[in-house]
Image (tube, rainbow, N blue to C red; front, side, top):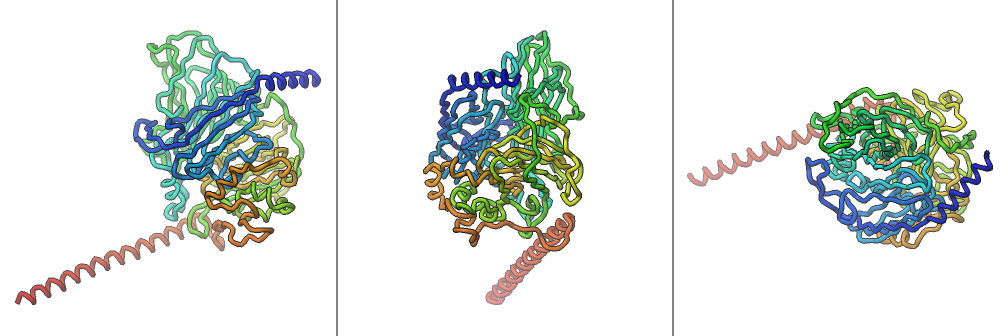
Length: 588
């Protein structure tokens, strides 16, 4: 049996190689005016003067080439979300992790060998540019799909804001937002519109590729009058799982098979309900029930809607990959506790183990490639890049504690990971072995996992992809607030695998960014001048106490400003009275 599977795999590989192509996209990243929700026109980031940006379609075995010209007034970069980039980490995209960003007016080419298939997306990874529109589907077709279907649709879910990201980010990270309330979107979109339609023909089977490209929102997906079979999660084919609804958090992807009905007498609503628990406040004008339409007949009436606030229980850890992968005991375990608190700069920041991520002065990949034997020493990367150094082919486990009232989707670049455990509460290694391991010989695999509030999840993967990979919350506001760490994978073999294109260095020079040495741009372990972040406030303040303290300070400043304002007003009145008296005197 094993020999047969291997033979089939070799035949598939040979067929893939024979059909491989170089697929090129030329992208001029530009500003465009758009009004996708019909409520407010604004400047967005588009491609080639268009918004939404085009979907990328490639096939397993192809080479994807994206020629980028940056025609906006700020640096940019692109991340192909979910792609392994094996031996290709320099094209992964996050600014100051694997590259200097592309300066305004400059060109850059991403060359990506396609080694996997499934449903992915591409988005800006400099600051929060994808919130402003720089995001789109990236679909990788298999040469021989695991499941058969007649047609397919891509369904891209997204939240939408009427204000540009940079303005909202400044407000979000301000000392005047000590509770850390995230900006709430004005709308939810399906395929960047509010009236998406999908034509169904009776009797056909459709593959729906669902992508959540949001900055914050989580959606509950279901279709009136239709069952769905989940067949893919984050690029991993899974055994069929029949569901009536399922949640999709930011950055996650699913494929489902939907069997069209036998007649065309009615049309049906496709639902993507935004989860109100993700928002601190739900404005009364925000429509949480985002809808599209399954159209069998343009003249047919809509079937009665199944609008609900009760959704089917769902556990993605129980999805079974079609291609099995056993797990092994980890060589290293990294417990990470995610939390938010007001730090000593008096703003609300995110931390893993009390460290908030701050970009280093030198892109971390460049540090790994230019510091010789020191590349295996976490100190060379600086405290605030929060480095986790692992050796080649080690098994690595990360136990994520969510010590926050909100839910968090965590994404690992360069890998899919096994979900090997879940439990409630906060896990402390001092309490003994991890209690939440799942007994499975073929654990569920994906690249983005939701960790609910006051729960924990254990993930595991083999460090077989040398490079520097970001691990972070994919709520964009939380990434900008510092909820990230850096995986330094196999630094001892990186120089023999990865080569930096001269264009990378040209961009660093153009932006005045150092491109060699440690996190500070110095030699050895001299981190003088390194970028540093705020730290936890001293003492034993509780979160409520810190918020109360900050509001007290703010109130004191406001009170002082009021006194000064009234004093100035009194001064002005007194000056006016003196001037009037003087004029009266002169008249007499």
